Image (cartoon, each protein chain N blue to C red):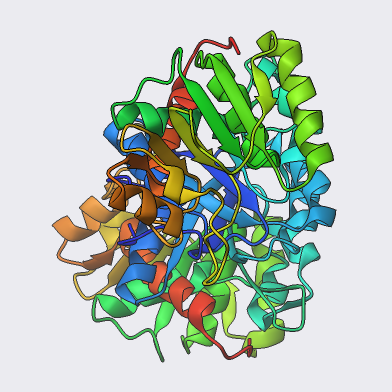
Length: 268
Length: 268
């Protein structure tokens, strides 16, 4: 928490529904304080039907400087932004918005940066490597885009839904010059393996990859935060792999989000 | 501040314009924590033109439990409440709203209770006493109503605007059985003197009462918070009077506001 909360404290919110599970209020508010910014970020639980009304008035709230967006609002908020980053347009969604000096909101989608940042924080440089990504949904799309932007040499994509997989690969290759290819649950030959599916959140979930084929030199990352170490991460660690968890991803993401809010530059 | 701020923390806001001067965010948030309630109160700066839109969506924000209202929104918010207390209806304004279990907002006007609470906290019992109130505006009206409700025997009201003074006296006497009378800046014969005007906020302001006629037995209260002790309060102390300041009033008010938000009873 910030050391003080006053009438002059700048306001930030995270919008979602449900909202009780989000970690941004405590983490971001502490992050503002650590950067000597007098700000507080609070949860706002708003239903899909009420989001447009909230966004309409949010732009006029004079002390509201930023919005973090979580499920199910990332697509609606994208449409509400006056400007967005290239990566937000690639996904067609935003997870963070800041007030523009000229009015309206600038949106970005930094979910994928959190994954790449967590991998980097654990000492693994994805540049020039072969990466395998499991899951071509919203989180997977953002991570795939970020991995290509981080310079992976090749990106294998696997999804149980082949049409969703192929659609993502096709879109990635509009930006990645053919670096995205069809993958499978077999990590053989990859340097970096990422899971962007919920497989591992519930007891009895199947593992998203064939862990028997992991080599100790491979880096394994996961988006799951509960449990703190997913069964895939536990198995990777047991085989000697360096790993990053969903919590590591959130930690990296928080730094990126603080940068986004506190940046005076308006470049995307 | 609350010891933790999470996605499950219940949300409260104070709406006003300007907003930087309000003290409720820090005080109320600490108050929630002291009462073991997981809540945070943050400032929301909203213009008069945007208040209706904000109120319209506020009722649908699932984790927003309460609203404190400050200048210039107290009258508009009164009109927006589904139910209000007798004292709010007397003033035609609310300064605090809580979500009703059956939907909509219940509003109250507790500004006057803060003044009476501060006087009581300083050891003075207004019941059966003669009180003189300077100022028949919004704050004065609330304090006058609260003093009568606290059982003062007689209430003198003074205001530079005689028609505003007489209108308040007439309305007070619909509830006070003739206890409200015309007052003057002369405190002679009164036991309790209250200033509800801004006289004393700016250097060179005239004193709201004739301090030369204060007796040490008189209690003198003031609504001004800046400076911490108004010139009237300084003069009263110099003459041996017991006093309460605007800050004392705010302290008492905070306890009342916490009671209001955390009460499960829906009585007014």
